[in-house]
Length: 90
Image (cartoon, rainbow, N blue to C red):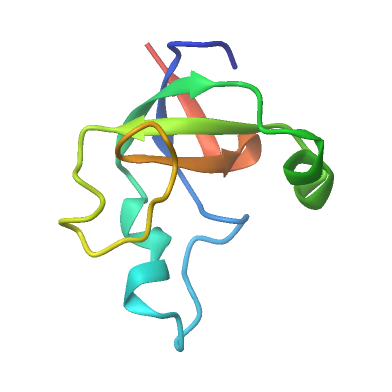
């Protein structure tokens, strides 16, 4: 993936469905099928090591707070995703 690449979310943490007991504000599976843009490639070693692969900061057009999701990144409406959870689109 590269900066400004458009992507679609195909899973979250490698799963297509969240657990039954997921908190509503952490139900990032609601973003499956949403599109966004890669806005940062620099996740830091701790995050990449934790996931064992490259991770990317994705900015969505959707207002994540309005959707009831937690998002605390400096870039509004953005979340870190594993590369395997994303599919590049034109």
